[in-house]
Image 1 (cartoon, rainbow, N blue to C red):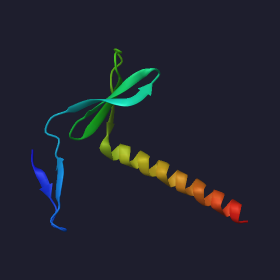
Image 2 (cartoon, rainbow, N blue to C red; image 1 turned 30 degrees about the vertical axis):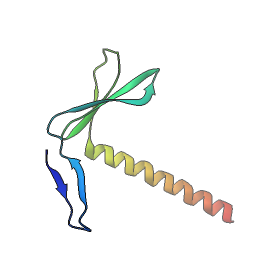
Image 3 (cartoon, helix red, strand yellow; image 1 turned 135 degrees about the vertical axis):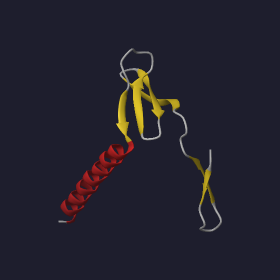
Image 4 (tube, helix red, strand yellow; image 1 turned 135 degrees about the horizontal axis):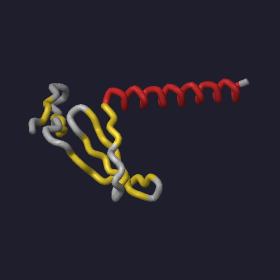
Length: 87
């Protein structure tokens, strides 16, 4: 796996490109069971540990769009609360 070098300030980014799936158990529980995330090159999967349920796949682009939508909604709510408190 190849580390990507950045030419700003001589820093090296230690992240590598996913060549094969990476599976990890998370600290998050859903309905009492830990969630397992599996990272693939173009998508991720989520599933509950210890169940026979199939994993749910989510491509990274969709994940970013959902994250930005949630961020935008929170910023809108914060602005509305600030306007209401102001006056």
